[in-house]
Image (cartoon, rainbow, N blue to C red; front, side, top):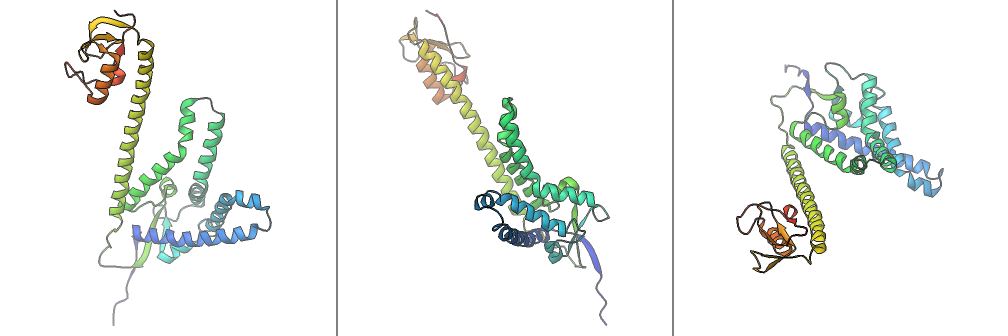
Length: 284
């Protein structure tokens, strides 16, 4: 007679969490569709279209209220035989409420709040941060998702904040299946690194262009000033005498054109940027 297999608890892996979320997403969309059909004849067409996102959030809250907040598994969790845990116990109702609220309406509240702050603030730094809150959240979610694919613990930021994990109930296996999503996590990390480098390069380039415009205006203002000292590049009298950090003297247009292309002083090869060149006032 064959021995009965023993039920054991294992930390839920990345594949189980992904499949569970896909199943939940299907049923959340189904509830959203039902709620949308229910409210369409009750609301004016304009408002029904205007509040589609709010209806979707309401449908998600309804779905999780009937499952997670009611102490039950979601349909996706039930499908994959996984259960939420906090340490050795089931998460408390308060912890589950915080998790659901953060997951469903956290981003919505942040975006709306950022819009209001940006509208009424007079602080330029705060206005800039609030104007980019959506991009910041997008990058944060991508970083979190890459860690999830690599290590497979918390699929959502709300679960990480509330320390809610998943265990899987199954019969004992001889080996733990490998994580097939690690490559995807590495690719997301690589994409973020490339995006960050591109953003930094673009920011530096914009700053250089702004400095060059300021210097060009200064050069145009002093363009009529001609020195008796000859420019080492054009070998003529310096027009709008200008010095880089090393102290050599050139025409404004000559040295700006040179350092923009070469990035150094033509005489001593000292590294030089256009923004470091200073036009001299009243120099003859």
